[in-house]
Length: 146
Image (tube, rainbow, N blue to C red; front, top):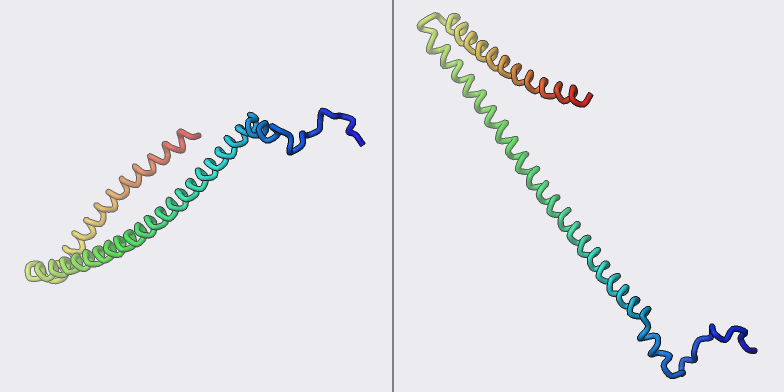
């Protein structure tokens, strides 16, 4: 049987020029360009993935080192505060012993405790001023956003 629409028939494979037309076709060139573009995009995506994985690994390593170093620094600071506390106790005991011959033992204790309490009061007042400054900073932020 014959095909009713002869214009839609493909040329036979052994017909002269059948492969030449496909190779020289503008569609073939576009297909080659798209294939090359797809390959380049795939390489770019793979490179981006590799970069992201390397960046994540770097940040994890940096965070681990920072955490260990911060922990060690905190431990050193706590130890320094303990030693400072012991030094202040020794200073207070030494002051009581040094003042005892001058004003009796109870007078020496009263003087040392009084001086320490005055120092505590001065530090608390300074901390309160700083706390007021911080509170004022946050009160302004709340006032601006409302």
